[in-house]
Length: 259
Image 1: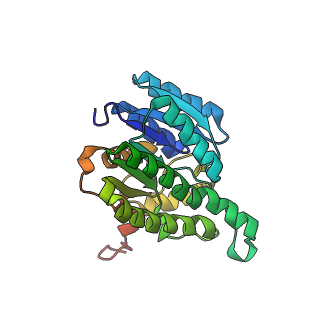
Image 2: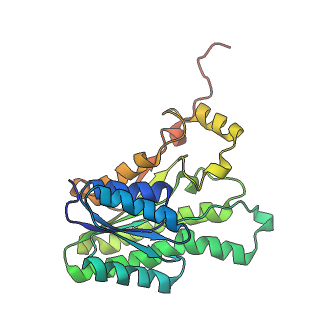
Image 3: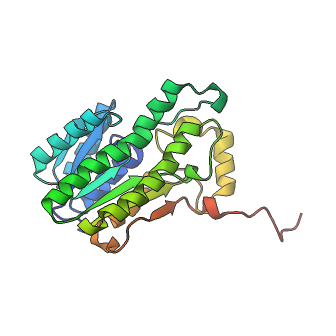
């Protein structure tokens, strides 16, 4: 029970990595506010798993790309649980738009969810943690796509690069308050967000390029989030942990192999 009696908020927790993180935090003893935007059934499924592990859960609908809805999310969560110890920023959207076809409205809409919300929720969480005076943990879900970029996904990749820089600045500024800020950069993970892009040819390429069992599971990322949310990560801040099965370090092209 690494997180016994802690209170967490997880954005985008109705499916995929966010859902897995909410469940993993509950497994380790945390009460969890489950944020969602459109998938109420998924949020209720997450809540059922949280409660099955003996912890309290709260579902709050909010579009975290909008500051006022972020504030409403936190107001409801803190009113319900009375405090906040762990903030996990995870909500994201993924769309394909070639650079030459990208319009301003689409660009800003994608960045609102994929980057702005990390600032908005991070600010609100930090202010609450400072008010409490007992420190806290902020975990941001980034992606290896911040440096292993994907054609057609300029806004998504730009946002993930922004999360990396934002997390490091926040870590410096919040360290005096004993609030750690770290990020996790998942690689190819089997989630509802990614499934539309994982066509059979894409899956074959991942199987060839990822040394550790190919496409990963959300639970593997969730376990990293538990570490960063717990006292096991004391003295770790401003860091990014890559969880990609070795994909980003695999430069092997067959040197030394027989033809």
